[in-house]
Length: 300
Image (cartoon, rainbow, N blue to C red; front, side, top):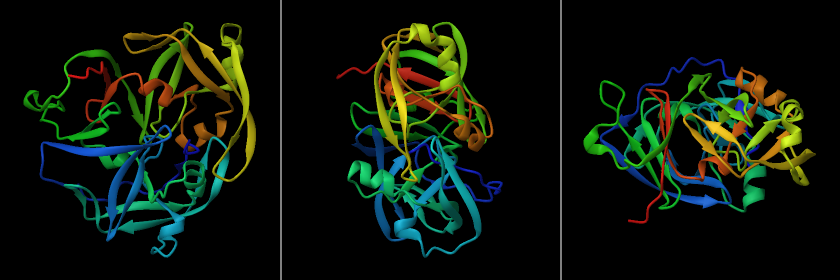
């Protein structure tokens, strides 16, 4: 997993809107384990970025950007606590195909744990603020990311709709550039952060104690975090996860202490919806309407 890296940043989005001369941008994606990889360009450097809705904005890997102009010192944190020193910088030419940003504030931090864990060169993370004026759709089955402009009502224009067989919808709260969805586990109401950088679902340890009798343990293992620290986590399963208007069965989850992550998010969380959740279908995030949808995959 990406270590659920998140950053406390004092910036109030000073960046201008991107240049986007398209209605629907079709972007090929790759996979590195359960991570979603998108190719993008920073100035003249092109490479892999992790699509990470657990990050609030653009994050750059210190290995390749340590000499970037420093604006302000920051601290990075995540499920494993502090991830090491980071600083802010400004990028003046960032591009995902025809989506172009003339100025982006970004954080620079150590992402070597992701590279070492997945054996892939990673230039950075693509956080939610990059897409806050759009709807994005991830189709893992066809390895495509769709970035779509919205009409004046915040809707995807009907002529641009790609998927119609929606089987789930949920509104979400968009706070501190983090997506929060209300749900329940075995009829216990919970708040989840939605994180495409999380390679599995996560559940706060204290919440699991309330639900534990209904969650058989599959295994126990060690998780290595961004800072190199290791700790034990419990892998469990449960049958009743309700998000929006849909019940999901046969779920798996890692049980861990999420206090530090909640402090970074600026809001306490009961769990994280990661790959085990979003890999069940094609999903769309409409950042303007604050709506999350899932669609059934068909090979037509």
